[in-house]
Length: 445
Ligand SMILES: NC(=O)c1ccc[n+]([C@@H]2O[C@H](COP(=O)([O-])OP(=O)(O)OC[C@H]3O[C@@H](n4cnc5c(N)ncnc54)[C@H](O)[C@@H]3O)[C@@H](O)[C@H]2O)c1
Image 1: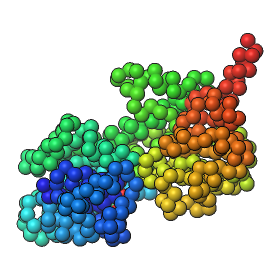
Image 2: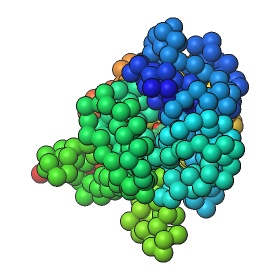
Image 3: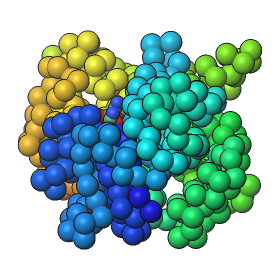
Image 4: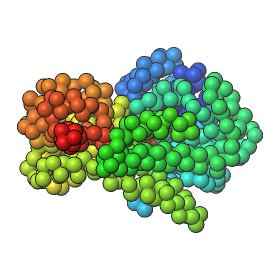
């Protein structure tokens, strides 16, 4: 089939390349000329495992093109995907300006029946809105349909997720459009569900709000575990054995970030509010997550007292491993707070430093882990990259000025860290303090 993806970001680019791999002819359109120039030189502007090989292969086999020319993209496609950003406005509502602009542009170039697909995450009612905008701005009188087809890929696993989707949701109000989409997705092995456009739009927000709730729930359980002497990993494992709960998304840590959960939780609160409903659960999730992100700084203050003038090494900037995306990453809140308190921040991330440099001032970036931790008064591990799990801890122990290690992702074992001479703090598990307490209480027995 002939496809056009408008917006060559994490979603549009990965989906476009993967659909080319499935044998479709794909045109990826973006207004960012620099991005398109890079793509035309086979340089991928984002970090996503496995994407480079697929791009090279599909460009070579002539199934994949990149352009800034939206007219060319629309005129030469049967299905046009809108995959532009939908960031939060200051009040939490969704900024639909890019979606609206693209809908108006598509309208001008329709030259035959098209299925226009909202792949961007958009509030309930946006399928209708896009339909109205296209109708209003259309120059000819060609037939078209608008479908909602939300995206569920995870950054860092985006290629795998697109190739091995859990489910495909098609929100359509016309049989013809639903059939076109079913034909497009006929290769998938997962359930394909056709719903109303409104339900499809809601499925995306409800899924992300639910996942954010699950993460925040286990983070709060971790906070309570610290106070009552339980271990959140044992608790999570025990809970996860219940098939109604499942063991997924039960890893305690310093909160969620990224380009989706923060904005989508705010958006669903706003969607509810506009419909006259106050979504108390998700409001509370948002506030709790904001607090959780700053837990390492709290710990730091407890242990160091004064942060002013202290060197804090931050390991990990991306909001999660295997991506260079730092949108709403906990690292930003943590570093900003430490800098406000007069601390000196040295940071390292395997791939996200150039993105961090665009939004964080006053941070020194190390060229590797060891250079970053040298002479540090404390280390905070923020992102659980595999390469951090494999660090030479003995070497780190000798490089730091003071061996305080705050493990925001529960990557290391407390016993091992303490044996190496670290003052080790983690989230909801036994750390140096609790082990000290435990050994003294055992001694007292
Ligand atoms: N990133 C994710 O993990 C993820 C997962 C599921 C859904 N989503 C949703 O998918 C959508 C896109 O997210 P993303 O992370 O890919 O965004 P992104 O910011 O990485 O990419 C958006 C792209 O759209 C381009 N663009 C904006 N306006 C344009 C226009 N008028 N014409 C052409 N191009 C234009 C931008 O230049 C940019 O390259 C959002 O609604 C997001 O919520 C994202």
